[in-house]
Image (cartoon, rainbow, N blue to C red; front, side, top):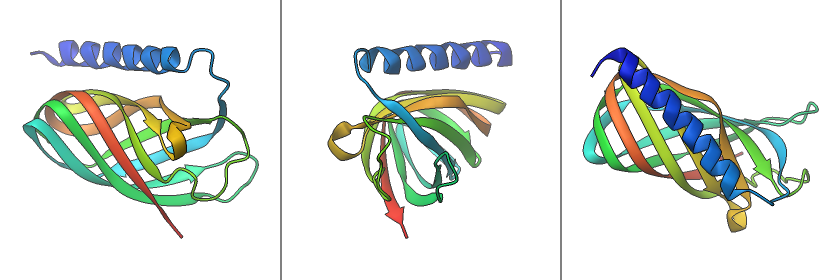
Length: 162
């Protein structure tokens, strides 16, 4: 498979995932409350899935202090190859702007897709947290290096760090 084909597939996956998240939230009155930036450890895919640790920072608008989170992202589906450390950014949507410190802690689930030959891209559209009240929409595509093709379901767990 050529780099162009992989990048086209990843770009299409990003568009589909963003559209799927938007449809899941149709009629919902969620508002943007910040941006979640995560660094995900590198590692190998195990054909039917993977599990990687991550460190995250939640940035809020208006000069409010950033929050730190740690967690894991597990993928079930096709995951073949390896990646170096990667970076993911999401727009965080909530039912209200009154989000307390540590509120993003919890479990999230959704769709995931990525493709990498040397440099690669991916996207993860997730919903979860307290009463599944938060939606994480890809702000930009996931940036990573390695040799990997993956697609399926993602489960992410976040724990607030003081």
